[in-house]
Image 1 (cartoon, one colour):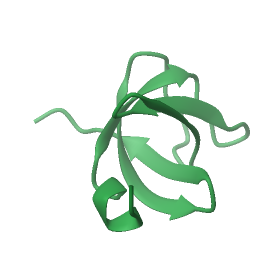
Image 2: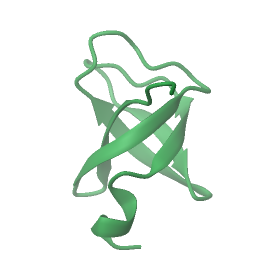
Image 3: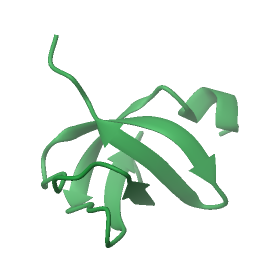
Image 4: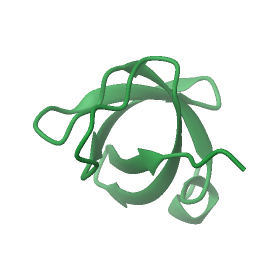
Length: 66
């Protein structure tokens, strides 16, 4: 899976992600380490958007409901 295919994708949090501590998300059947700059924790079950890749870590933000 290349970076262009991942950035912009929607994943689901399986381990809380906070600004202080990496968590985990599930994307297309694979679990990834994820980090965020969001001030409030992103809880298990919430949807996130992948905004960047840093090595094997995905940078995420909370998905806005629209």
